[in-house]
Amino acid sequence: MLAYWDSNLLCRFANRAYERWFGVKGSSLFDTSLQDLLGPELFAANEPFIRAALRGVPQEFERVVPHPDGTLRPSLARYLPHVVNGKVLGFVVEVTEVTSLHEAREQLRRHVEDLERTNALLSRSQEALRLAQRLGGVGSWELEVASGIVTWSEQLYEIFGLDPRMPAPTYAAHHAFYTSESWERLQGAIHRAIQFGSPYKLDLEYIHRSGRRGWLDARGNVQRDAQGLVTMLYGTAQEISVRRVARESAWQAQRIAELEQSLMTERAMNQRLKDELSTTRRS
Image 1 (cartoon, one colour):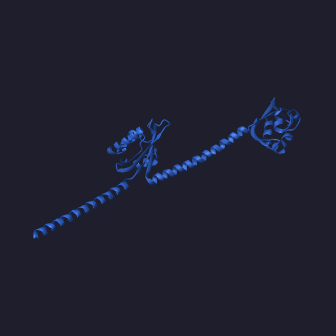
Image 2 (cartoon, helix red, strand yellow; image 1 turned 30 degrees about the vertical axis):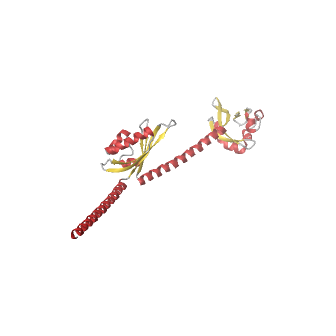
Image 3 (cartoon, one colour; image 1 turned 120 degrees about the horizontal axis):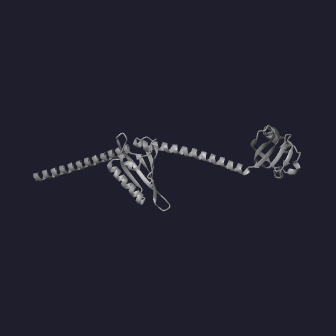
């Protein structure tokens, strides 16, 4: 929509787009005042921009323009001063309907809000996961087979006594975190997982950065691509040193009880043989 308004705010030109916007023909607006066209409310809203344009300052702003049928149309308005020999004679008005742009911007705003809510939920979920891993002494990891990139959870760093701000150790560097026997079993399990997709569950003896040793319940599984090839390994490692000690203590206690029972049985048998031998001699 294009128009020219002189310094007295009287129309000197208006194109036919005014008929669609305001329900009046552009040619019939000649000598019509801008205030009469816009009405008191819309004119009052636009007046600061009008006065600035008459001072020679170009204006650009957004405005919702009412349609004769009552619908509201977002628009972008530009007021371009017409200056001759330093005097403002009027200004050109250019108004473009931006309903589609406004709707796209509104959709983008809602999309951003949805992303922010999703990120907030994800952040809370990640925090809950970190808390659960910390309480359970469980760390998690991922290994991209093709690139060899390893990712550790924060709790896994804590289990091994490493700085979580540092990159996760490479797969080849993992041998330093296990005894030779445990590392050999873990390597075999990972090889079978990559080659055949076999999940695994192992008890592994690990070495903390401080030098102390402990035990992990290590579990791993695979992720395949559309062709069935293993592309990712992932799993967990749970600190079970206390549990293993308790289990071994229980096993040792049971073994001692079994040995004591066997010894008591053997003693009873020996005593019975002695009694039978003594009875035979008296006979």
